[in-house]
Image (cartoon, rainbow, N blue to C red; front, side):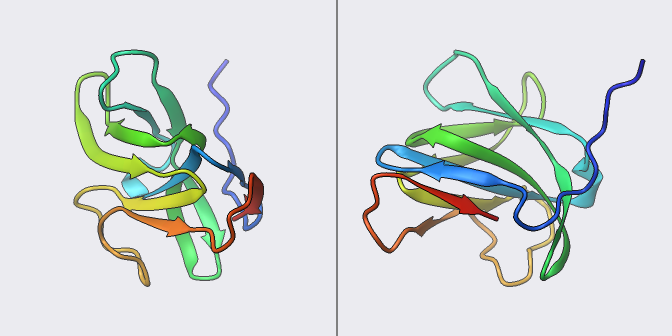
Length: 131
């Protein structure tokens, strides 16, 4: 039996839990990474990695490809292309959604090419956002 490949995601299909000490990452990727699992791990730790699937997402700006990592403890992370190759370093801050573009991918219209954080305007103890 083959592995199930998820269908493209529509707007509003991702819920992110943000709060003190907890953030999230939206990693924009080129179409050739569609269906690929990319792993993230704390930069200083050799412990377990978390993975997310790059999926085609239909947005108001058209089709974009992204992997979403919800509920990450604040800190420094690296994104892994495979078991031994890191591709990108990002910083996750509490109460924030950090956005980043995969290296060598075309810039996403309306987005900065490097990692950046989107801070919540109000100091909530926790909040869920729909993308």
